[in-house]
Picture 1 (cartoon, rainbow, N blue to C red):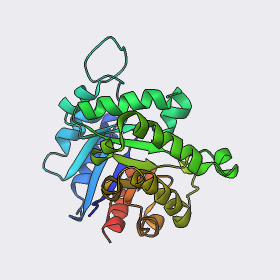
Picture 2 (picture 1 turned 180 degrees about the vertical axis):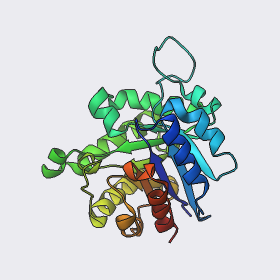
Picture 3 (picture 1 turned 90 degrees about the horizontal axis):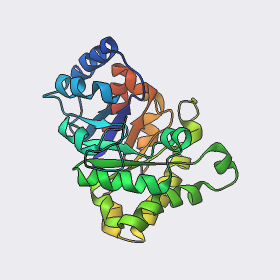
Length: 251
């Protein structure tokens, strides 16, 4: 049975004061036991978030990590081993902002995915199409290629200890949201792509939806058979709103 997950990606948001306030709010949430909760703070605040949430059933993850597990001459990068030492359990790989704004390719993301797993982290592989690609009818082709790059290079079995997040680029931070059926259709295709290689892995891999998820639409999205929770952006910066989304997942 796949355990539902709600994860909050804080992106490049936060000050010492606002992070402390958010930690306080998260610590006061009554979390349903059937939902796994995680937050992805900016790298600078990981230590204080890990310390502040000690004793809470909330995992901490990194938003990005280097393509090699070991230390080295990569100025400005953070290795997945360093994230693990800091207390992280997960790391985002291939978020659309990394793909679009920083030019991260599928080949690079395969290396990042492998390095994360080698360091004991659970990679959350983000896939998704732009508005132009959706309007051209290329959604499943684009998502299939992004997922297939990892499967082809590392084998489908790596998803036994990984998570996939479908985030249509056109729905991130825009207020637009894929309809529950649109999201379900893509999630079903992702699961089918995994199942073509290994049905057991496909049945156990958690697929999250991300893209303007709010308390108001969370329950309907999470009610779809192949949607196992959400990767939440802006709404995760408000503890009350994030808590409402978590409760929706629990229901």
